[in-house]
Amino acid sequence: DTGVSQDPRHKITKRGQNVTFRCDPISEHNRLYWYRQTLGQGPEFLTYFQNEAQLEKSRLLSDRFSAERPKGSFSTLEIQRTEQGDSAMYLCARDDVGTGELFFGEGSRLTVL
Amino acid sequence: EDQVTQSPEALRLQEGESSSLNCSYTVSGLRGLFWYRQDPGKGPEFLFTLYSAGEEKEKERLKATLTKKESFLHITAPKPEDSATYLCAPRGAGSYQLTFGKGTKLSVIP
Image (cartoon, rainbow over all chains, first blue to last red; front, side, top):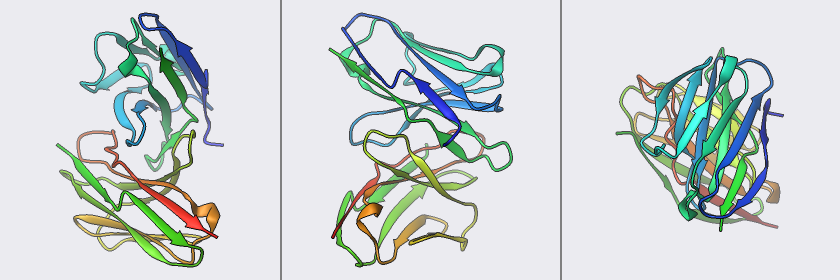
């Protein structure tokens, strides 16, 4: 158990619809990350939060993407007007406060038809 | 910009046949080189972090080593349950993000 829960595990949607993913760390960890992974590739960084502040965003995070972490606990990643190219695994991770090591959840797989 | 190259892309081994996976990286001010194992449809599972050249860490049949430009994951006498994709990711100075390679897909045949 990595202490990161993600929901839903799978989401199938039609192009143009909005989707939201949720990440719950086991406790209120300092930093929370979002990564995206497509088939045959390694995870790509999207954004991270320190408490409730979003401190870094990748250029991959277009205007259609928004992430929040209200109250510094759980986080949500919303994709508006989904496109087929958004089909991927969306991974959430927490880091260990002492070592900085990242522990990932099982991911939310998005399929856009 | 941080860059990572993993080789080979895929590796098939007979059970018990030892080998090594390579991770070449270019990063400004390394603040850790991370190794992960990933099974199909799952999130990456943390294995090791190495911080300085010459450092080595071991876990069961796996040993990770680090130089200034490369890291190696040595697999000794692998078993079929070691079959997975192995990912490496350096962390550079000034950022908390990891830059992942594409991974090496390891298949261990009984």
